[in-house]
Length: 219
Length: 212
Image (cartoon, each protein chain N blue to C red):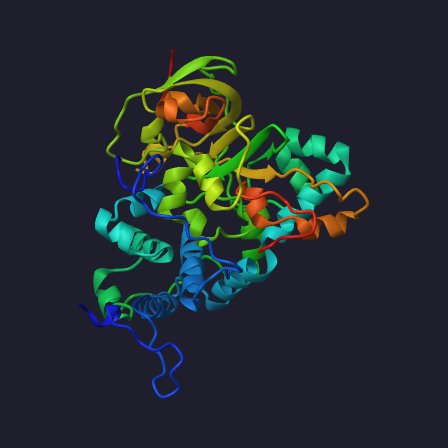
């Protein structure tokens, strides 16, 4: 979707405020929010692409007003309600619905080290034809999906060169909507900065963007 | 104006600060999920502890220092980053598929995620607020030299800037240039010089340690 999360190239966002000796979490609740989101992910009722899409759908004014981990919580609540893990009444009341059966957590403390050290790969070991090869000239497709996509607006319609084939990965656009993984090749595509931004950019500079097969067309 | 917008003293002993809205809400949410048996409090504690104390930029600094002192390791790191980083025991969540890009006298690399906040957790820990902020995400791709200048790094015109937008499931780590004057230093001492900012590409490594 052409949302405000797709920030590349926007003006007016102000200066970058880097904080010295920044703590990992500024307040205890941020750590709890982070951990709750990770722990609820272990129920496997959604995937990473769906979580990103959920956060992208936060209305623009709220998106900028909320802090980072507040957005995580808003996204989590949306996903939990959609998948039936919690009900609206439970969230409003703060206690389980009468008669609901207590579950056994999907993630316990003993499983945390392996969750962290193993991760969850989005690469798939399947044979899929690569439509492009390194060195080939390609163009970012001019498409405007209303759902989730990882094709930033600033490369749509722009000419680039395939630098590297990263292999086959789950396709976010369909995966976010639970329409299947549609594994396909992801390429590192190099765009000249001037192709993207015109003469204001330095002649030798470039932007490398990782793009799925379906985001590209031959140029 | 709501009560949230009104100024309040932060260190007033007579008026203990109330938790902010999100603190109350997250606490209520956690209690509900525990009551429903959906989350285990000990698992939450372990997750917080992992990212506060166990995984952070020291991991990446060790990788960089090894690459500076072991040419064969550096080759492996640039060719097959996952395996090379795995040799030092790092990998996993948000570092499943790593790419290491090398800074030289003529090439400077900068990492961003314009669409969300993708960052190589396994080697750098969780990202700082500025990395996740709108200004950094908006400007890194259109004005990387201006962004670097804001971080105090002025690049010569003949240096090529490569910006890496982490739009897919690859995660990027910058291998900074080894500063001159560090020839006699041990790997462990070198690792102490390497900063998170240098591994994101918004700073260079200073020969006498970080200024911040």
